[in-house]
Image (cartoon, rainbow, N blue to C red; front, side, top):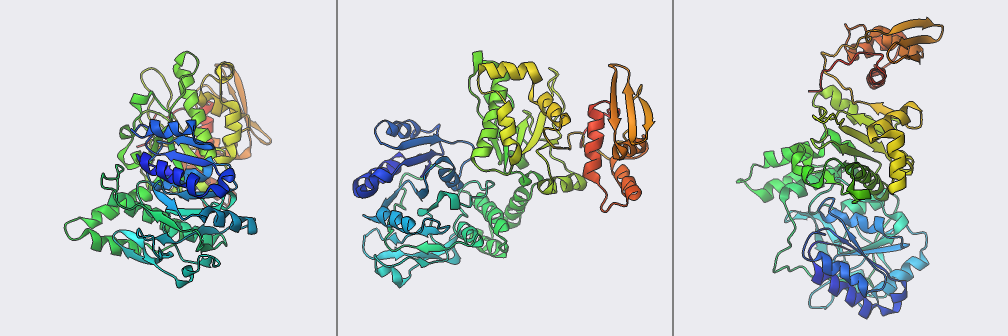
Amino acid sequence: MATYDDFDGVWFTIQAIRLYQSEVSAELSFVVIDNHPEGAAAEPLRALADWIPGYRYVPFAGYRGTAVRDLVFRETDADIVCCVDSHVLLRPGALTHLVNWFEAHPESRDLLQGPLLYDSLGEPAATHLEPTWGAGMFGQWGRDPRVDDPSGEPFEIAMQGLGLFACRREAWPGLNPRLRGFGAEEGYLHEKFRQRGARVLCHPGLGWLHRFPRPAGTGYANRWEDRIRNYQVAWSEIGWDHAPIEEHFRELLGPDVDADAVFGQARAQSAHPLAVFDAVLCVAGDDETCDAHLHPADVAWRVERVQADAGPAADPEWRRLSRWRAALTAAARRGYGQVLVVDDPAGPVVPTRPDHRDRLAVVADRDWDVCLLPASVAGGDGSAPLTVAVHQRAYERLLADFPHDAPTFMEFRNAWDDPRRYLRERIADGILTAVDFSYDRSDDDRPVLAPGNEVIQLTDGFLVRQGSPPREHRLNNTAAVILELCDGGRTVAQIAESLAEIFALTPAPSVEVATCVAQLREIEVLAESGIALP
């Protein structure tokens, strides 16, 4: 279960399971995701592990919202996962029905749910949700008479409330990591199962009772803005039309609320260029210098602050590398396809021009391990901020290299000094494949050969000799042509267009040329223009 300041709910739910589902107790473990680990309930929740067998407490403050249910499936190694709200009671024998069903269907990809019970404990109240709107939620309670036989076979439903749901862990499709705050999972999650060829079933024996009243309040934020954005994000993923969302919430919010502004903000956030990344993880600065409010407002809602271990003698560089490792570990554990790691207290520099945004939009479809993005100007201490996207195919490689203890920390520091140099050298060695936008420039940038470089024509490209320090670089034919076009009169976009004409390419290879120009600047074959990204 996932919980937020609800110790009583967790306690009663788990103890009721232990008392009234004892026939399957040997097969049970408990995973509790605490979404407010700095709150008053945290220590009592943690202490439950001292006397409840198979209990594991997982603090998680990366983001807030009902979608942290996703971590229930990421954090367990159980074959079958039953996710319940932290204030749900199960009908006696419910888990026996669940276990028996999955034992009879060991390869099932289905989502298994059960009927919601009335508080009076009479007949089941609701077997499913009808796909209609009401009170800011998609889904209204409905009842199928097939539920009247508690020993009956499970039957297909469109959707159901998520107070209780179960599936094989390997069948879990995941929740969109861009969801924040309350709501939008009902209907969306069920459709994700169906789009993978699975069914959504109501098992009559899997009855559950939900505590809806909260006289003392919930404690967590429940904002319409979050819910509207969540529906937009979720429904975009599964290909559903957004029109019903706007129609319902415009009527709900009424004439006193500027609905256009609310929907405009939600669209801007859900369609932001950095939305191509499953997470934005900040590893920069000390804890007090990298709160989300220091990041640009249009991305702050997505930024997760990654905490550091104290490490050897609380060394600042160890804390930095520890946060890097924690970020990559979290990305791998959560199954993220690609994450943006921000090693810059000022936050990611977000491209604002259409062509820059277009480049980010195609990032997901390109073959890369890391994608280097613009960072803010280096600080007065000479530090070089770093903003880099990491693809899931590179997690294992980077985690093998990044230090995990004092000896490996010293090895890393001696070999590479910092993450920027490490990435550059791994890219140069061909160990990591990169797309480089870190030198993204304005239209005024016109690359030119750096002074003092000698260019020698070869049969298969160029040889570039540098005097101080003495170095030689061999450029293949394509890189040689790009270098020739870097005459100080053409922009990067114009160079790409010229290259397209020379090699009959459609469309112009804008990303490839920008990456090549960046690499030539990195090795000082091209002069540094010094023009910052607007």
